[in-house]
Image (cartoon, rainbow, N blue to C red; front, side, top):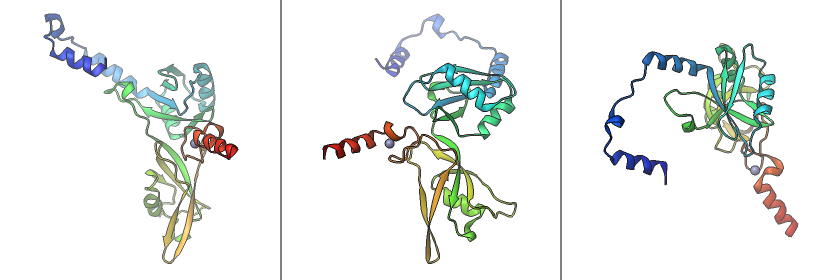
Length: 234
Ligand SMILES: [Zn+2]
């Protein structure tokens, strides 16, 4: 029986005296717990395989090089609750995204005290995206905001105070939608001329160029395997 059905059935029942009496929680104690929630992150590795807890703990502690301690609690096959001793460490980890474990993208979320951990949906992860081949006139913050809006939510564009960018490419921090195939680039039409603007995602690993997704690559791709099998039979 589904949990929801069960809950609806329970609601129809008359409550006993004990059931209908309130349990009074101490608000002070609750505030303390809620304040501790600021020190947590929930991380999920984008893989279908189970993640080894000890391997995860050792690797991530080494990569992050934190000032304080960090505790990992396994919540599921690929999911961990990560508790930081210091808020600065947590913020440093969030700023340094994306992170990878064993080449799999580690998606991260802050903990919302008002919802259950099982209700969290890992949907977006910030990446630095480099835009190559832009005409000089479009190397600006405003252009970056508008052009990259098609990939996902733009967090910031790397530019000087006057809004111009003087580098070999334009770097844009974008919250990438993990459920959509990544764009490899995009056509730009400026006046009569058209330009292919290629997107380079910094630190991108475990990316399937066949499907355009982040959850697998190469020989783990079902599409690629099906095609290869088709070739062998032909
Ligand atoms: Zn694939």
